[in-house]
Image (cartoon, rainbow, N blue to C red):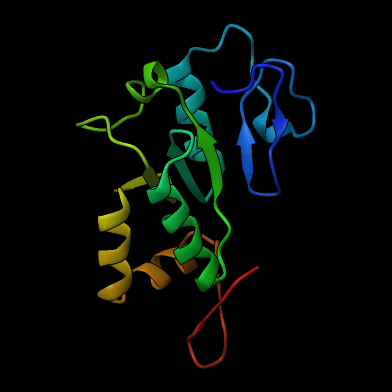
Length: 138
């Protein structure tokens, strides 16, 4: 995965690295396969986006979620690792909410436009609801 010397890229973007020690949830076993690592990360993070570097659609996904008040974990994968994503077709960016793949940018926008995104984010604990039922970010 990008940045073998790795570490945190920002508060919500990470690069995987066998040498990472900043976060126990992002640590990985040296003998862990790419597929196993991806599955573990999906299960450990309520909202996670897998992308390629310099992906403009990922930028739009992050901005949409940030506007709502959610800051997803973002993992950059190289072309070989994209194939390890648990998807029927290997696309990127791919967003997972609560361990379930919601798909790419079009699917995320469709969830938002139909009013299903905020309840899903609340359900997985990535967003709080105020007294009026509106989403409140962390």
